[in-house]
Length: 96
Image 1: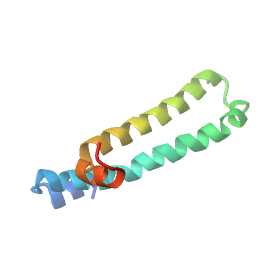
Image 2: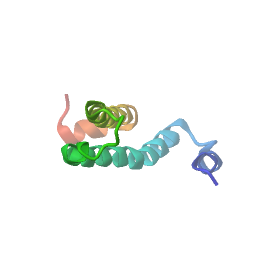
Image 3: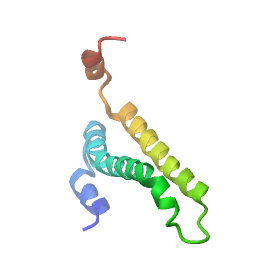
């Protein structure tokens, strides 16, 4: 069963609040995967550049790694802004 079918089956009639909680839980794993992968590629990027096949521009490769990192950060920020309970965040960090 695909993740789409499984989530639709289990949460199709859930409340909006429940769906946000599920959305957060389900998206954290792939976001962390992209963050970790982009960090790993950044760490070894210079060593990999000499091994790239002909036709792959080293600067484009570096740019792609940076774009992956930026995209993961943006996704994390979007997810946090829409799914974290602001009152709990304020309690943890002091009222703003």
